[in-house]
Length: 353
Image 1 (cartoon, rainbow, N blue to C red):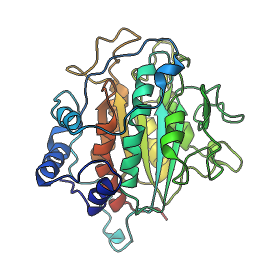
Image 2 (cartoon, helix red, strand yellow; image 1 turned 135 degrees about the vertical axis):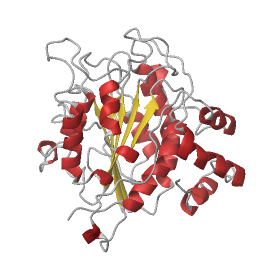
Image 3 (cartoon, one colour; image 1 turned 90 degrees about the vertical axis):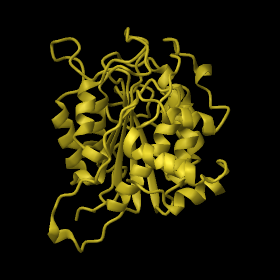
């Protein structure tokens, strides 16, 4: 069972997110993390049309206590058993220093025509997500990058390719980010910067390739000197990949022309190649889940198609893989919950030399 560290307690008190959690609340959350799974609520879908006014910044930050309680009791949400953190079983490494001082977050967000509601949800959940990052601020640095499910035409010159990081979207420029890269750091106003980057629009190609975009975003070509993603992924940082899509990533046309190249084990191998060890990665997937769930019936524009192949990819990470319901009304509870897992993974981080 994961434990709540003093850092989490103190940040929630200091950041004005409500009264510190008392013993009863503390026990309820840890039991939820270890047993009952992630929390989701039923949310209404948005229309298919691009409505930039409809994805404005949220009016309120965080969740009420009642909302958190309701989300924790929802049995439709799924989560892998946290169990023990994965290890490589190598006794020769017992004396090596472990723990991370840096975390790299990569968000691969579907920007096709059925995703407007999810992008609004993500933007609204950003303040809670940022508060969760601050809960582990003993870190020296955070990198936060966003990519899409296509070669994004609104990206900066040189980044309009699959896997390129986004610092400008359909609503305008989100950067330049403070440290001069196409990813955010703690030097940025993350509420504004991440909220902007999450609003990718819903005019993207219907041939979604979120897993291939993730693989390319981590690949060496985009990390070369002067390339779009230069200096984003670091050997001494824990990698947290977040996939958000309401459709399966598969060969939808039956001729091998649509969907990401490769199979789930190919995507998994590519991520491990980028980081060296499975225990140095956390994979989070907000996708369509099998009924019962919080989604209306999938009709191509509302609801969510069950992400069987994405689930298979995520489950390959064992205790470090978490599935959430993309139809949840609020992603704030999801991100708040998994940050405890991320903190544990950071404690267990074993840098590759």
